[in-house]
Amino acid sequence: MQMVFFLLFIIIFIDIIKQGGDLAGKIKTQKGQQNFPENQILDWFTQICLALKHVHDRKIIHRDLKGQNIFLTKTDIVKLGDFGIAKVLSTTNQNVKTMVGTPYYLSPEIINGKAYSFKSDIWSLGVVLYEMCALKPPFDAQSLTFLAMKIVKGQYSPVPMSFSRELKNLVSTLLQVDPLKRPSVNEILKFPIIQNRIQNFLSKSVKIQEFSHTVLHKQVF
View (tube, rainbow, N blue to C red):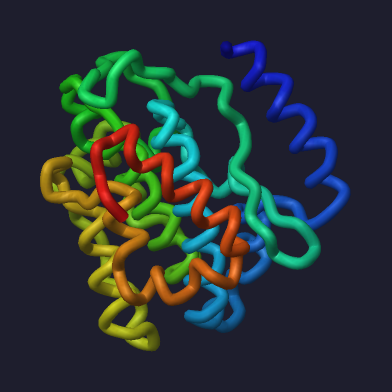
């Protein structure tokens, strides 16, 4: 299974590297300039959520969701890549304890050595969303120890004032220290600020096909 993920990543990477690069590169280029328009952020975020839903519905935790693994075409279409440390669960209720991932994006439960599951990806998704808004990670420190302390406390500077209340609330909802308080990706896709954008990225037939997979989680969308 991991070999399949690796080959898939190579195919995507070769294709995307010739096109629009990755989200981390976009954020780095934007630093020192005006923030991204809110509509652009929400378009990217909606696509990332749709990609993550596709993964989670198949009982896969990505475990390394970050800007460097979110690729963009020339027309800003998102493609989620690098499943090298992804974990396929036998059931949707299964938890894992292996500490893997990139420090800035690690969830509090991973840092605390607790079992984790899909909600750990949701935390990383919140970090990515914050970065798109603030052009910097929400948690930063001079050492891994102090970085870990900030993450487990959930301490970060507010999202820039220029963004809407809905977007700010979305960030704070994803960056809940308690994983039980974080929404699932299917719940995120129900938020009006996101739901209204889905039709821009999925055809009617693809939407029906994709959202029928929520039966794997016994959820109705």
